Image: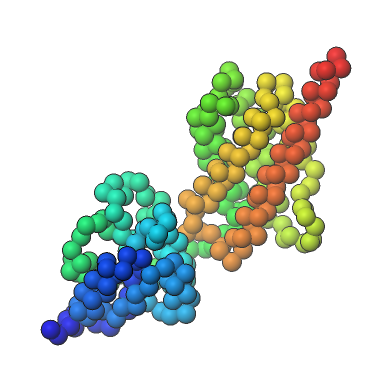
Length: 284
């Protein structure tokens, strides 16, 4: 059989850890005229993205871990933003469950599917594909600064779902406490260069100390303080997940390390405020 010439010389990176599926897709796509590079792991896919150019990516979502395909899609989107990205998943409800992935992938293909249909989809999308819009990249601190309202709202929702925390009869303002100021302090620290090699560049936080004192008066235990701090970290990383297309990945790792250090330092100071009020109550 003669390969179809309709696809031109489009190069496709195919990533799937299932040998049989990968071989079948590889053979079919090449027969349809695509120039295919097939890999079996995330590491191989990332190496290819870093060293070669592609017109399209087809990757399985689970390879073998849940979300592996998202890692590959994200890398392709930021390294080669004009490449078409297709994410393959075996879950029929993926259109809803993976809504955030749609921020990065151009299309989600649900298994089972006809490989010939995949080739047609690739050809159609490549024919009408336009150059990717260029978005201004932002540091983590800038994203958190403009998303403070969303961060507080998401954090409050998560806290209300926690049995360890929501048994106290507090209104939203009381439950939030000094959190808005704590997030502002974090965003401000992220906006500054990390100029030292100390274990921590965290500064004294009056808001964190006051937060700990308030929590004691509200009936929080030290364990509850730790729990709400952990929820804050989850919320912050969720905010970054929702803003992947805007993130400056060149400084993402040090910024994430700063988040962890600052939240931990704030928790330490909140604990100190909590203990001060505890000692004051014991002496009264």
